Amino acid sequence: MLGFQAKRLQWSTVGQARALMTYVPSVDDAKPRTVTLIPGDGIGREISDAVVRVVDVLKAPITWERYDNVSGTDPRTGGPTRSVPPEVMDSIVRNGVCLKGTLFTPLAKTTATESLNVQLRKQLDTHVNLVHGFTTPGVPSRHEDINVVVIRENTEGEYSGLEHEVVPGVVESLKVISQECSRRVAEYAFGYAFLNHRRKVTAIHKANIMKLSDGLFLQEFRKVAAEYPQIKAEEMIIDNTCMQLVGRPDQFDVMVTPNLYGNLVSNVVAGLCGGPGVMPGANIGKDVAIFEQGARHVGKDIAGKGIANPTASLLATAMMLRHLNLPDFSDRLSAAVLSTLETNDKSVLTPDLGGSGTTRLFSDVVIKFIEEH
Image (cartoon, rainbow, N blue to C red; front, side):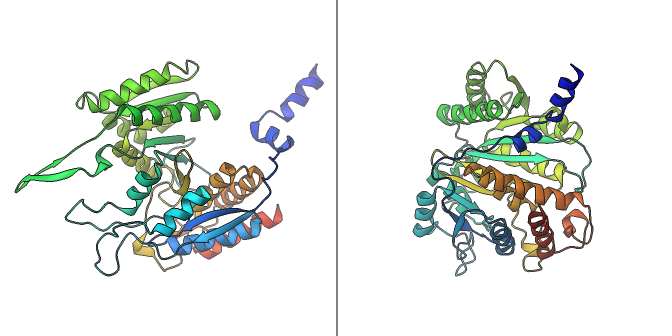
């Protein structure tokens, strides 16, 4: 009996069991996949160069379809770019998967021109934004054991951009919340929790004030929650959420939010877990997935200096590889990135993590871990 217990303990963790069990691929899983790559603005190009280098060493079956000329700022006017180039949209639709840097949107006096980030979400109907925040050794944090997934409705709410000036000096902004969009983001959140063995989903709202709009969001959340009795469902007002996140983030598991609240909560989680250079994220639709850094920070102030942290984009790439049914490549990349952080070598870590390293040096160490394991 004791021998049996000892044998069971050898495979006591999910990671150990997964390392033992073979991955059974589908017939075409080993064939090269074409992925659209949009480096974006600011630090996007240097971060994308680092990702391409690492994936090349990893020898993952990925071919990049790269578009370096896509920017959120029109170089002719200095204002927002009016539309995503058709060939870029065609590439994303054709490939179904995209890795993207942040597209910077300059302030404008009119909402007639949406940011390219918002255009992509609406035109491709990537109605779910997912950001995974977690603490890891080597990354400074006020708290331990944070492991929070923020799932945000990505296409409506205050981000609908429906604003107009009623009379001079008075502006009206419309908040659009629909039953359909509220339900499908709730369905995704509970489905995600179920498939990832998560135990709780918390709906973030302001229904005490916005009784109709956020009330509709909560209504759909409750309907979907009833379909998953094994998962605990909670509700929390957005202002209390921010306070609770800063004080006791370990109480959260999966959070589901309307659009604007999700933007705020994701950035709070990013700050708790090490900053915008650490957290991976994704935008998910029915037929398209776009992977990016979770906090969407363009880093214009450090662009071109070679000191940007590639962690968020590398981990987003690991998420992408798992999405493409390439779990071994995903695990090896994740392990290499996390091992690099865990060294806590200040000569390797980038300045945002308290180090003096460069994008190139950090990537070199990640590559060394990949080659040695």
